[in-house]
Length: 305
Image (cartoon, rainbow, N blue to C red; front, side):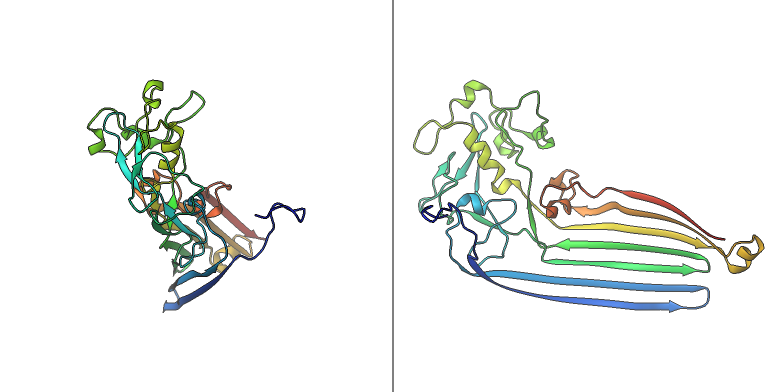
């Protein structure tokens, strides 16, 4: 941001330095090779880390809690921080947080433009640290079965910011609201805040006793420690079953070659954080603007005349 004297209110420029390093290991083995049977195995794993070594800007709380991560000195290029959740109000069920300042006050309002990050919790990088996959291929005479399992670990994700004090008929509630606070005492068994009626929403106060709009604590909740999940996943990404007719059979039916194959893609997420409620953890890495990867089922017939 500039004063605007030069005719530009914002200017682009390099504002930080970083150090990155990585290591990748790959194994490619033909385990068994005979005339009628073959087994090929491929495995790879990679680990990449980064660290901001110098920074010429003062990131705000809003920058640090972003789901895309932010550049913070001494942390990864896209590190994620969170406002620290301090529980639900006993009487009304709205969320409370640890505020800024040395005394760490419990409050319902935090200025997100404040650059005091001392009371935020560091969650981890938003980019995976370790990725890899295992591919295997079995061949028996004319049959071939191949599959790929891929995995990713070491990163965190921010759940969609869809927790609100009130909802209209034009909105769909998140599945999390099934476990929301409903009466005093529920704060002992759930961390999902209540849906407030107008009278309750008008009674929320900060740590100084001042009235606060319900918009603020519920918005903070979406960027708190309660809305962070692990980005780890294991997926069965690819399976292919194919059959090639033998040359002798093809010759008898007057064809040069004939093959059949059935392929599936992205069919099973073997492991992912349960808090995602079925959302694809790999989808979050697309930036939030692309569709999740669909499941594909493909049958192929190839005939050589």
